[in-house]
Length: 280
Image (cartoon, rainbow, N blue to C red; front, side):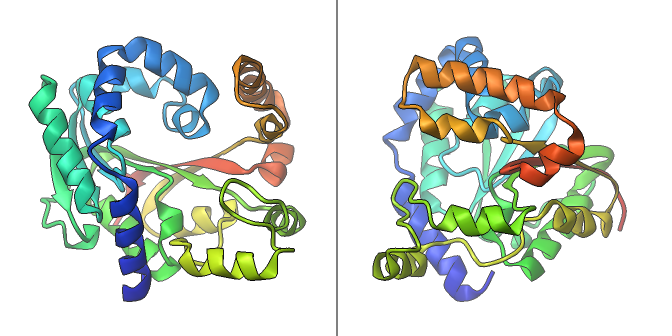
């Protein structure tokens, strides 16, 4: 990440995350089963990270989350019994964690690691899991390589890294995507508005292909798995927010797992990347 892009990320997320999130997180961890049963069946990043009974594997484990953001996932993992270390470049994430520790009796209080992850000064070979929820795509590729190397250093020999990231495996779908307005992102047809949005966007231009993440991971891990997601769920955007949309998401996320892998991989919009057996 260039210094300019790093500063852009810090400013963006310091604005985005604030103490107002704390009351919501406390409500969710106090109603943990209800919350997880909902988000892991309707929200893509939660469905991905918690795929294959991840929630049942956390108790008593030592977990590091890169880019903890609004700290919701860090709090959920800690409430499930994990010893959680959470890192973010945004100072506001640290303030949220401080408030959470003051207001919820975690078995292990969440430990915040502030600033540049590469300068974490953590002892190696100590974490069962390293988690990144929509994190790697914020990094320029040379820096991503350093992060993956550091991930391998921090994991125990049978540890596991799990990253949820966007996926672009068909170029024409990517071209189409930029011309469809989503949220505060204007269509590329709106040249001036799109240029202004792009200048403020904290994400660098880089590859999000599954092949890229496979090649990048094999430099530091013996085992690499790519789970394509959101082949069918992407059509949930045709629905307005509400129960009908959620029912479609629940159906789609189950149904697309039965599609041929080659089809899912080609059409996927997101992916779960799993790295195991670190090697340095």
